[in-house]
Amino acid sequence: MKVILIVLDSVGIGEAPDADRYGDAGSATLQKTATSVGGLELPELQRLGLGNIPALLPHGIPISGVQPAAAPTASFGAMREVSDGKDTITGHWEIAGLEMNPGFSTFPEGPPSFSLELITEFEARVGRKVIGNRAASGTQIVQELGDQALEDGRLIVYTSSDSVFQIAAHTGVISIEELYRICSIARELCNPLRIGRVIARPFTGSGGTFTRTKERRDFSFETSEQTILEALCEAGCPVYAVGKIEDIFNRKGITESDHTPDNLSSQVAVERFYREKKDGLIFANFIDFDMLYGHRRDPKGYAAALRQTDAWLGDFLACIEPSDKLIITADHGNDPTFKGADHTREYVPLLVYEPQTPGQSLGIRNGFYDIAQSLASWFSIDPMPRGIAF
Image 1 (spheres, rainbow, N blue to C red):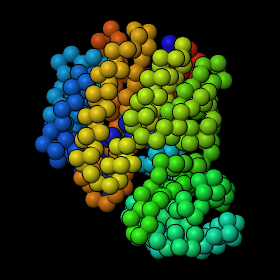
Image 2 (image 1 turned 90 degrees about the vertical axis):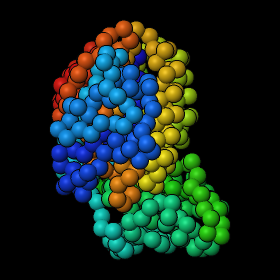
Image 3 (image 1 turned 90 degrees about the horizontal axis):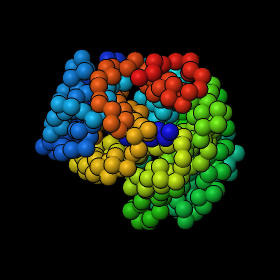
Image 4 (image 1 turned 30 degrees about the vertical axis):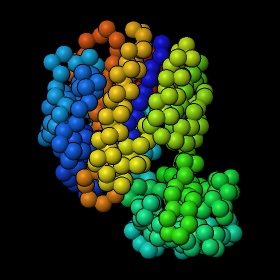
C-alpha cells in the first residue's frame, strides 16, 4: 500500500477558535482568496469535498465558486492545531504526531530583533558583519539592503512573526556552500533559544534589483521525540519526501528525498515516487502558495496556484490504485488578503481519498496528529502517543 500525504503549504480554511490570540481574527485563506478573485473554479477539489468543509466549522464561510458536493469522492473534515504557534515546523511536526507546548521562541519587530549577545557571537563565529536584524518581508529587505551586502559581503539577518533566523547573502560574494556553513553555525547558536528554523536565503542581482534563488534551505530545530516518519522507517516502511520535508524533519525518518523548489517540480516528484515505488509513505509539501503568494499578499497568484494544482490533481487521481490512499491538508494559513505578511492561525482542510470508497464527514479533528495516528493504523505499526485514527 502507498499513502500520498500532500501539504498545500498555508492553504487554511478559516480562523481557528484562538485566532484572536495571534492577531488573526477574521482570516480565512481559501475563502478570502476566492472572494477577492470573483470566485474559484476548482472542479477536482470540489468533487473531493472541499466545498463541504466550511459547513462543519463554527463560523464557516463558503468558498465562492466551490460548491458542496452531493456525493463527495473523498472523506472530508477540518483540523484544529493544538500546538502553540502557526509556523511551518509546528504544523508539520503536529501532522507527524508531535505537540509543541510551549511553542518556539519569537522575537520583536526591532530593530534589533535578536539580542546583541547572539549577533556578536554569530559575527565572530562566521567572520562577517550583520545588517538588518529586524522583522521584515524577505523580498523587501533584500531590495533595501542588497547593494550593501553585495558591496562588502555583509549578511542580511531578519525574522518575522514566526520563529525564524533568516540569513540572506548575495551569491556573487558568498557561495551557496558557504552560506549553508554559516547557517549551520547559526543553527548551533539558535538551539538554546528554541528558534524553530534558520533559513538560508541566497539572492542575485545588482543596482537595487535583486532576486532570491531556488537554493533556499531550512535548518530546523531537532524533534524532541519520535515522529511517524521515524516509526514507519523503523518498522521497515519506506518514507519518500518531496520539497522541504527533509529540511523540516532534519532528514530523520526519510528513506529518499527529492528537494524540489516549487509546486510544479514537486508534482512531478510525487508522480515519479508513486510510479516507481511499491509501497510506503510519500510526504510532499507544495510550497508556492505560502512562499510566492501568501507572504507577498498576492491573492491572484494564490488563486492561480490553486487552479494549477486542481488541474494536476485531475490527472493524478486517475492513477491512484484502489489499495492506496491520498491525504490533502495544510500546515497553517496565510491569508493573502490579510494585514501584514505573516502566517494566519486557521483550521486546515482535510481530504482523504480512497478509490472506490464513498466519502463521509470526518468532522473537526482536535489535533493535526490524527493524520499520524491514521498512518500508524493503516501501515499496521504501534499506535502513536496522540491522535485518533480516521
